[in-house]
Length: 193
Image (cartoon, rainbow, N blue to C red; front, side):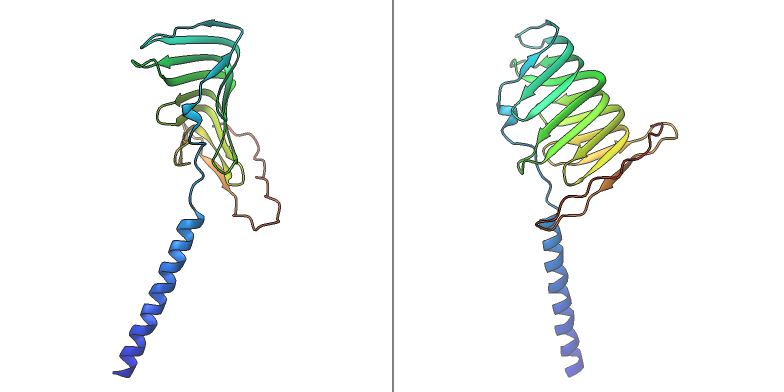
């Protein structure tokens, strides 16, 4: 009987330790979210030429050295199509470039950057779809490469796809201890994606 009670106490202690470690792991793995008020800021643009509408359900086209900014969000490329919804709100921005580029700070001031041939940014839901030789780098967290990467700025979730015989590849960086410099990802040789 004493052995059984001792065994139960040991099991409870292991369970508490496991739950404690699980809670600590969940805390340490919390994603860094994009600046939450960026989408409440005005979107500014510059380009060599524009055919712009400020009316419901329209698409404005910006061409040549396009730069769009909204809070800490910055998008650049050769051509941008800005889609306004029925309430004249920016719903979507599709950018092509060599490459199209997106960058944004998260609430911890860490920089996320992405590059691809085409960038389709859902401004309402905060989801960037990068297509064609896509890469996403999260400062202090890692980098990801593939033919198509989808980055959710609200949750920091990245999903990737590879076409043909290509692969999705990347690097997860370890959490840094205070006072140590963050390691830089090892550059990979260019591969066909």
